[in-house]
Length: 523
Image 1 (cartoon, helix red, strand yellow):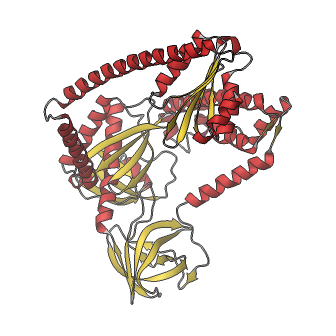
Image 2 (cartoon, rainbow, N blue to C red; image 1 turned 180 degrees about the vertical axis):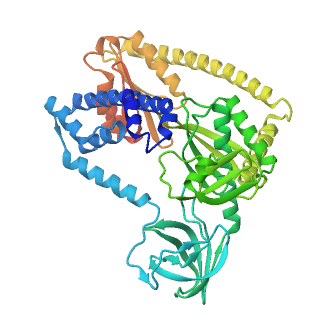
Image 3 (cartoon, rainbow, N blue to C red; image 1 turned 30 degrees about the vertical axis):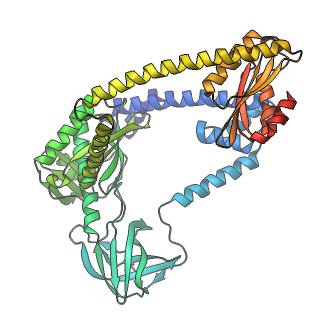
């Protein structure tokens, strides 16, 4: 597919001029996605083969796993199944699909229930760029399950958009008060998702007040995304463009085009550049203009987004200029401080970083400093902490080695003792409790016994928190006739546990200790 990119760009370059500039980047992303899909497809085919090895039908659960994890449409699963004379539980698959849809629906933001009580027509006008408290009236409301959805004539509350979460705050009416939990768009309306905290709701004139503290933290994070975007492009290259974001008070995720993890040096350089712009307390300008004028100014747009003729521009000195309708600060100095706390792959060719700013970052740093203090106190030093930890790690390695040697010695002694007993018996079957031994020592003991007595088998077990861990071993001469990995399944049924392993040795756990005699009798 990636080889078709030049032809597709040629077809659409008039409508999407950005395509030509991003040809190389788009080609790399599509090629990377193709390679990733083929790898996933190969794993899916292997999974399919594993399923039909032990089953003559593919359950709805397995068919859904092939779809959800490996990208197999049900039609593809049915086609491959037909080639292998295997049936597919289509009804079971559809039931799993419906269950997944219900879970997804339950995770959806907010969907008003019931019917709207319409007082006046209108969707509500957002006035929150200039005002955080206003007197207005209710246009419509929807009350259900102790929750009230309210649409105001003028709303100071920012509705979730552009990755930024919606405002919270309060709505005060005559003899009642609502707490605004969130604000979102629904069918073109600005909806306040509220709960009653005083009195009984009644429509009429109200006072709407945004929680300024929470909004400020969101604005810190959102303004920081613009600084980060510019820093990424200056540090990594022009290909590093925003692909998505999620902004909440004091914290944000930011997805951008890049094909490998950021190195520590790159993260340090990005953080230094962003914090340098914060300390310079640069002016943040917000203004409306036409899309053409914004493009002339060099404003960046998010690839794939559709914009109207009038757009809002956010300009940070001569460092950053973007199209953005979110809530922002007036100066970068209000952000306080910026730090990247994690990074991961969001998709093929797209990296995701998570960052924190402002008061949330101060809390993060305070917690880390306190943790370091506690570690220093435990280790008895406030200097050369890293060296002290290195010394402890070396000592731990020495102790682990000594522990392994001790386990081996104990296992050899115990194995010799049990081998003497076995050699005196005609029926070379042994059952032994190992409560004072480590699991490793128990395994080593079994290994020594089965190598010394080739026509033996046995069960070793130990009690742990009211349950048991157990091990079945089989000598070399009996492995083909009585493989341990088959015996463990029957033993596990008797004990009420679960287990598995190899023909010469298998392990299980979670069973009832009172059933051990029944397991021994089975052997």
